[in-house]
Length: 110
View 1 (tube, helix red, strand yellow):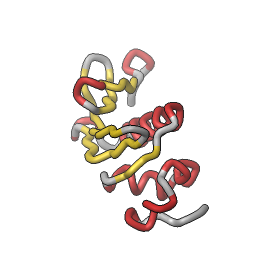
View 2: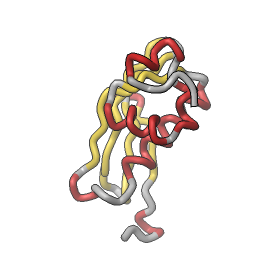
View 3: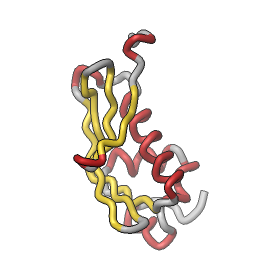
View 4: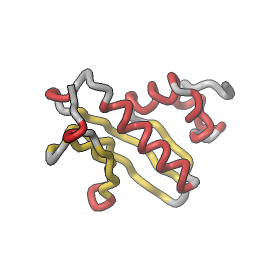
C-alpha cells in the first residue's frame, strides 16, 4: 500500500516524449508519445513489475489524456493499453477523431 509520503505523481518529460509516473524518487512507469501539430499519438506504456496491480497505469493514462484535452490535442491511441483505457472510460472517446475511431476499433459515439 502506498502512503502519503509515496503518493504517485505524473510528470510530462517532454525531453523524452513521455509522461512518467513516479513513486518517491523511483520511476514506476511511463507512456511514450509522439506529437505532431494538434495530434498526440500514444505508442507504448510500461509499468515496472514492482508497481503492477496498484492502479498506477490508469492514473498515468488518465493524466496524459487530461493533459491532451487541456491542450486541445486529438489523441491517436496506438498503444493497446491506452486504447483499452479509452474504451473502458468513454469520457475520453471524444479525444479520438471520429474518422480514426474505426482504425482503433472504438465506437463512433458513446
